[in-house]
Structure formats: structure tokens, C-alpha cells
Length: 219
Image (tube, rainbow, N blue to C red):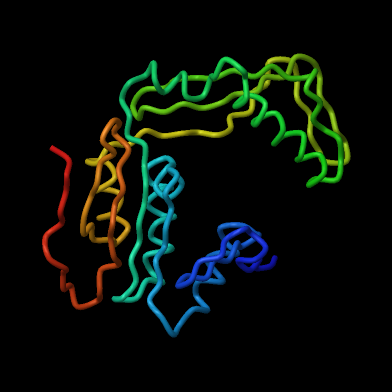
């Protein structure tokens, strides 16, 4: 894993240095813990933090909350849309780019795993809308026997793999997540034309003190 400095990622800001961390969330977590001499902002603007089955989302947020100091802050974005038609079309574009994105991920797994277990022609792909909680997920279904002895994989026709679950939690659910994860919401902002919200928060200190009451532009 490595850090790419700003001159490698095309930015030349005067007052801000930019670095791209090439790695996983665990790599970012380990790297963030090493920053001890300045306040830290943890930003997840694209429906990543908090976007999971509720208990799993709380567990993930809690992990980050535990390393936050009083001067640290977190800014989280979350799509809370309840319009199923809009949600569906956001993942099923006419050109099929999102399906291509999903298939490309599985194709790349052949390189990661060191074996060509996945071939497009062996799998159908479809989207599924689900209620309670509202979410969209992708499912790939085996069209024939898919066997890779080196990886210990064996799929029969009709076997399915769920992937890319996108939960659509509104502010009420997100606030419950934050509370259970040990985070205090300072302010909430809603996008003008959609229920896409940004949540500004901080980790609760051990003494139980609070910042001023949260601000919100959500009715």
C-alpha cells in the first residue's frame, strides 16, 4: 500500500495538500491512527459509511468513532431517496454502464484470486429492489455449472451471489446509527433536489459533554 502525493493525482492547491491512499478501508484506518499532531476530518461523501445492514453499519462506524479525538470530525453523505423508480433507473442506465461495472469487478477478481473462475457467459445479472429496509442490490446467477477446484468453488445452475447492496436510509435511521455508534450529529444538510444528506458529527467524549445543538435544513 502507498500514498500518492498531489502531483500524481492532478491537483495543485496552494493551501491544501492532497494524497490518494491506494489501499483498503483497513489501510486507511491504520494510516489515520498515525496522524497524532493535528485534527482529522473523516469524509465519506458517496454513501459508503453507514450503508450496510443496520447492525453491521453501526459496528463499522463504531470502529472509526473509537479512534476519534475531541478535535476530530466526520462528514458523511447518504442517499436517502424513497422514490423506487428513480432508484432503479440510477442503477439501470440505458447504456448498461452499471452492469458493465459489476461484471468488470468480477472479471478483475480472476486476477486478484489468481484463477479464472469467472466468465461473463456463465452468469446472468439482474437488479433487485427490496423493502424494509429499502435497498437495491445486484445478483449474479449461474447459468451452468461453474467449478474451480483451485479455489474450492462449485456453483450449480441457479446459484446466486448477492453484491453491491445499496441501502437508502433516511435521516431518522442514520441518526439512530450515529447514536448507537457513539457519534453526535452537529449539523445535517439536504441536497436541494433530492434526499441526499450530509451529516457533520464528532465522537462523543468520555465525559459526556456535547457541542451546541445540531443544525438542520431538513423539515
